[in-house]
Image 1 (cartoon, rainbow, N blue to C red):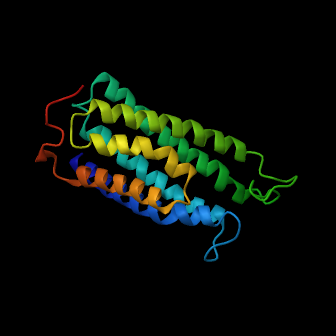
Image 2: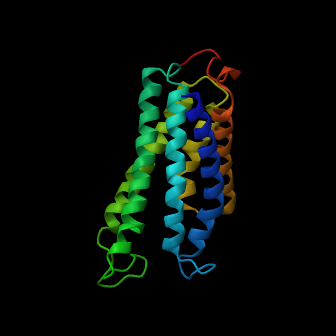
Image 3: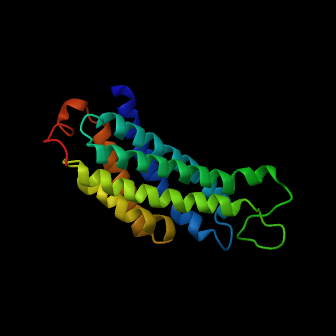
Length: 199
């Protein structure tokens, strides 16, 4: 299990890096293609970022399962389920349409807009709300050096999703994930989860 936790740290690092690189590109490609890729192409690549985030959260839950209070347990599951919904919304809006040639992406508009895109966006919004609250709860309940990282993720989550064109926000958000990855990658006897318990 410790091997998986360390790999979840690598996953958090990859998620942070790919978010920092891809989210501003996706936002910039809304009106016209960028580097021969469309807005939809960049968001399909971001699917893997959401997957990296989900794996990282699995590692977080496993590593700190003895430290979580009941509230922390609930918060961690909320954050994980939120990321799963964000991943699902991304797949619904940007991947399934590849097999529906009669429809066009929602940003293009018209009578043949992909009708399920609204479902994907709804999943995205619900997932964002759950992830934001979940990270905040986990950050509050964990008395570790991870607290500022987790609360930082909670605060930045909605800004990173809605204001992806602001490179600074994406960079700090990605950096928070990298810091989380660094903690998860460290050997389990370094004391991160052994520093005084829970709230």
